[in-house]
Length: 388
Ligand code: T4K
Image (cartoon, rainbow, N blue to C red; front, side, top):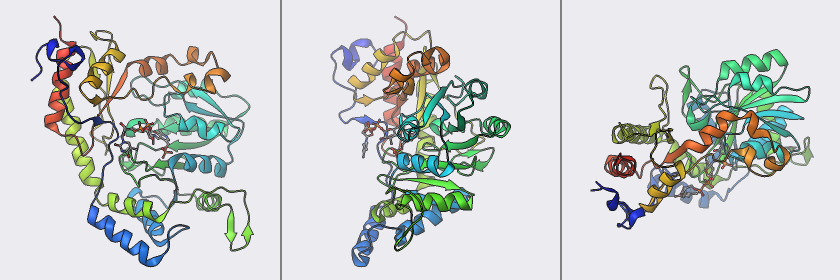
């Protein structure tokens, strides 16, 4: 038990945990089912290029999300790049700076300028009023990010896009199986992009997808994913290699079968954190709207001005106990290169981004966490932050 500050590892005591507790420890489905797929793959000698498991995976993901097309890719970043190309974005595209840097890089990598708009500090997603302010004659689109699996302001952004003739797409890397207004995320905007990275709620080792109801867009994304090949010897687009491989699809199929179990585990962890952190001065748990389906993959706390420790000192205190808390997405894309040099004053227009990025801590969850471990994480925080 940890009761006084001398019990804390940062003050020389033994760490509360022998093993490291990670943010992003993979959620894994049925090992035997995966091994059977591996046997089949060896039998078939079909390893990549639109194989049978990839096709099955695409069909099942599309059905799960209630969207017409799922074009599976090798990872979420390439899926973003292909979606951006397929949509014909150019010039400037408005994005949040408070996101994983891949959202911005997917634009920059293709010679498109990411223009950072501020977020709503209550939701951590784009603030439509801030988006409006960043529109210029060069703006071609908006990428909303459903951060932490909580929907970006879909209707507000769609209204701006319609008014100004802009394309709207979403980075839904965090939002697999989540809903907005009761409708599954995946079919909002022109298209949405998923990530199935190992650390995501739902993984295929590495993977991603463009999902859309638009037949033509899906077809273009499919061509671009495979060098632009539209026939055996015929190329009709400049394309790249964004293909998902069979072994990744096998993992995806196996994990798809346990989506509800992982939601249940994550939801239980989230509620265990609510209980463990209740009444601790100086930290606030970001709430999920229980009227929606959430995947609860990210347990987020914010330090408030009353917090006895700085955010970074609290992270150090947790890490000393082998609780590998993360500061996602500090310091914000605008403070990373090349954006930091390109837009040295961007921070002035992003006060909410700066404040949120400086106060956020992401705590471990997923199948490898449980209520007992979370109670100990709570004890550590309560002891570290209690009044003398
Ligand atoms: N858009 C958004 C909003 C995103 O968050 C991301 C990715 C993307 C787009 C791009 O999608 P991808 O191209 O990645 O499909 C991680 C992930 O690499 C990245 O996928 C993710 N977002 C981001 C939020 O987190 P790192 O550099 O922080 O991960 P890393 O290596 O520190 O791993 C996190 C923890 O997980 C570690 O403590 C170790 C543990 N871990 C990790 C892996 C890979 C395991 O226990 N097992 C594993 O296999 O970026």
